[in-house]
Length: 471
Image (cartoon, rainbow, N blue to C red; front, side, top):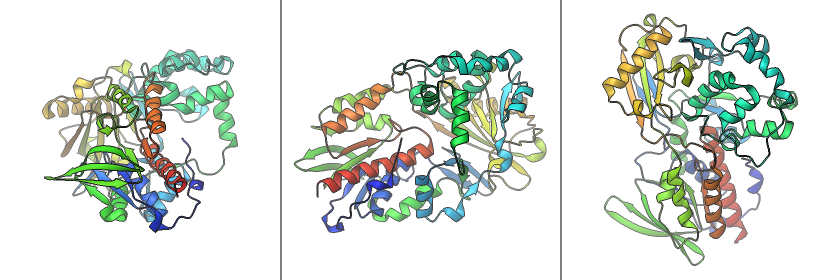
């Protein structure tokens, strides 16, 4: 997805602009609204919940800090950097500790460091020698037909072999999507992998060429002293009264040359007119949005079928002396073939300072996903016991935690499954039939925090172009 500030080039008198409505006060909607405001476009943001930020949440409790949603932001685009600078967050950024560059994957019941250089790769016990030598044939494997919508599992097995799928890609997919590589589309879930094959005929050859051609920093993993929630808080502060919390949109209706939005707030209802409407919602919320008289709106009901498995985030604090593992990395991931009861664990207090009191460590463990959805629905006692047992076996944790918090997401990460193009096509059809209505977010733009920020930038750009064209 490409975003450019070049779209914001036509100066338009502020008085000539009618407000743009943004439905959804998550990071995508907030970013879109802030970007439009930066270029003189008045906005109103409708957020049904009591707080901005959507799934982003940072809970500070004394010396502990639990990120209830995303744990890191990957700053790898000028748009993300410009947003942080514009919100005066540059000096508050915490770059992940260099120690956190190491990743662990469980094999044979033990954490094994993921190799990060060719020499370490061939010396690593993570893959067998036959799997390592099998990679030598990858540059000679023919690319798939460009129109093929192939699963991640089929793509990786075809090019790299089943062991690489089991111990490298499967745990990575669990960490990003809490998903199953057998159902995810490589074209939509990991478009960069798909592009490497299509553009270079080989993942290995394409990676080398891109690495040699790139210049400058590749990006940094970031957070902030009070967590990622500092971003939506800063956006909310900049938007001021333009952000309306606990305002539920009841309908969106085309009314002549404008858009009318109905809303409910407490026991009060109201209606207002806008020049354009940006919908920055989850797939579920977008599928249920009442778009009155909008051609093709019925196609959005298909978004209800996008899988969104449950995930539980279990944040545990321990005395440092009670954890045998050095915790010298980002965290560990578990392949499905290992049959563990967790998807993975972040070494939160290694990543950034201020996540645990002195002499203690913080671990954030994820449970459930497509792999084991019922485990995420277990009651608190069972969930805690299960996670503690896994941490004892994998990290040498002794005794009970001194601190614990659980965050549950009944419908967590949208799965970009094979056939996902139908959902993107539905969004495009609605937009094309209704100028001035724009749809984006995790239903089509990607699921990571950085993707959501770029989605907000994209939505602001197309809304600006539409507004300016009518003046």
